[in-house]
Length: 337
Image (cartoon, helix red, strand yellow):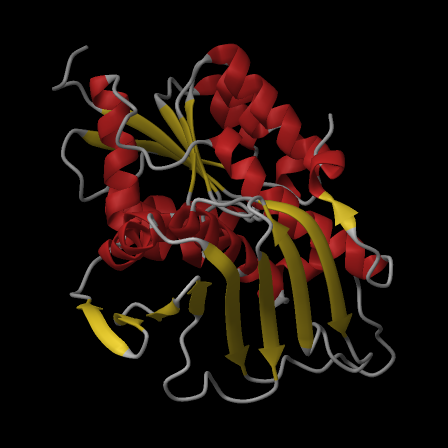
């Protein structure tokens, strides 16, 4: 493996998210060249190419993958766009895949990508960036010998936008860009999995979605965990923010609890045990994946695409439960190919 060779990257999706994070990081890494960028909105692709001195821009992802000689593809498009098979085509060409969350809006699309990755043997990851953040790694270490009995995640934010007169809420892919449970739900589920070492095996969810709003005011998910413990994940859009002192993540174990307070500190049974320093997990995730490609060693990648399916499935199973008025969903059955 030539550790000095230039890694050639294509970026699929050139909105603000890609420009403010991944493109910024990739163009700062040594021996990395973003050779092409693609966005269905031509102006976005051209603007990104101009801003980051990228040689070529496209509006068709398949054309970019076919014409360019890429080592890796960063897929930063919305999940609903991945049904077009660009990631599958890239993997089949031997292109390594870095994919933003959520990976897909249904498991069939996710499995098509997963099958292509497994057949080709390319490296893959889903951008669950906070796995690289020291505070989450420390929480994982502190919990490793604890018998967890319940996990609580909650995120509270302001009211969503109101729909124009005559419009009604949509429960399709449009929710991906509007509902907090799609925006942060995959992260919450993944970091609960990462810190606890447990998987979700059964899902039930209820949404409160008044018709005048573009997204639910509350989304309440309930899970059974692989050790028999319970978990709740709540997104509430009603007030300006999280109550003072309330952690986002709270792990109850036999004999006590551990709270992860945003990216600031960890407390155990009311005593602060870890205080975080500034850290950029976006940069670290991008850097680690590039280094894996350069060296041929994927051991430092903290999750791959197949593992990410065990984060995606509970989210989609909960969404399905809510559409069935709270009918519980067995996740292993839901994941069955």
